[in-house]
Length: 124
Image 1 (spheres, rainbow, N blue to C red):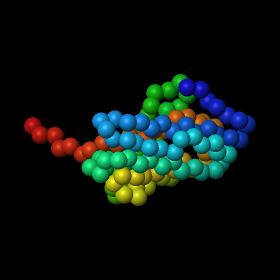
Image 2 (image 1 turned 90 degrees about the vertical axis):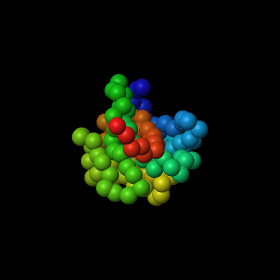
Image 3 (image 1 turned 120 degrees about the vertical axis):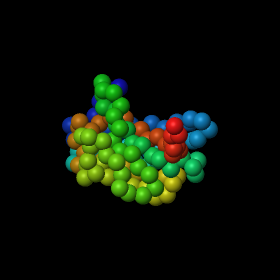
């Protein structure tokens, strides 16, 4: 992937969605945002029992990184290098959520993914 900027003060954010195991996941498609602004991406899905939502970031030339893991209520689990102040997440209900990126900078340009999964208790 490559960085797509229309000017030195605009950031392009691509959002990817898909289908897995019959669950349809829908996200905000593409955003162009000016530097220093904030933007919010939404994610929804079709399986009421899949209440775990994950948000990922993939920057140009890098591997995908987990930003935050959310359930239906806070506190959410942020990965090292990502903060709630920069990437606040929200959950409307079990089937929808959002991720905001605040104070966007050119280095935030990339692809953002959301995924969902069911909770499973591992048994020995």
